[in-house]
Image (tube, rainbow, N blue to C red; front, side, top):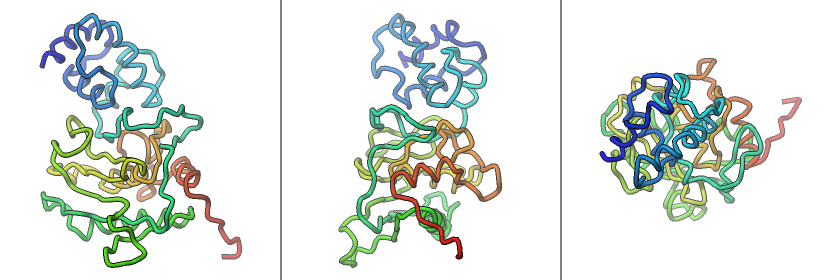
Length: 265
């Protein structure tokens, strides 16, 4: 609460469009752009422009340090909760970025650990979404996937990627708040996917959310390309049903290799 009060007093110095201050503060906090315990309004004010610049860079915007309407509008949209603090420190060297880790065994196993508690999404719908994304990735990379079978000698004791519907406060480095719908960890950190329960999933494209997170779990970072599946905010594809852009495909191929296409096939 103290942070919100301090932040409110500073908004007029950095904002050029009316935006709820609590919403902006929540967004910046989610992405690690505010100190955990800012000690004074002076400390906040002295660093606020750099926080906004960092957010704009993450979103692929012109980094002016001014919280203009375009920046604010993107902050309002449903987005991924993967934060800067979960990332590798390696600088971005291409349009897509990698989390500097990948699964080194095949197949990569995954498990859906529970059901959507709202009942909006049937188990078969959720399973089908992950079946389709793994099948698609296997068409253009050398990666292989399998639903985890604890009785198989070929599978690890615990699935590589565990997918769960979880409450806002859960056993994780970051809780859900604001417009975050899901988050995931990279392979080096476990590769698990957490989907925010009690959301109105009929209002969002479930595939866009969980496929984005699945690529995080494979080691792919966010992209600054706004049409990419791996852009920070979730959005419908430009063409119905086509979620992967060349940018997304190149990122996965950089980690798992490119499958050669038989010209005669």
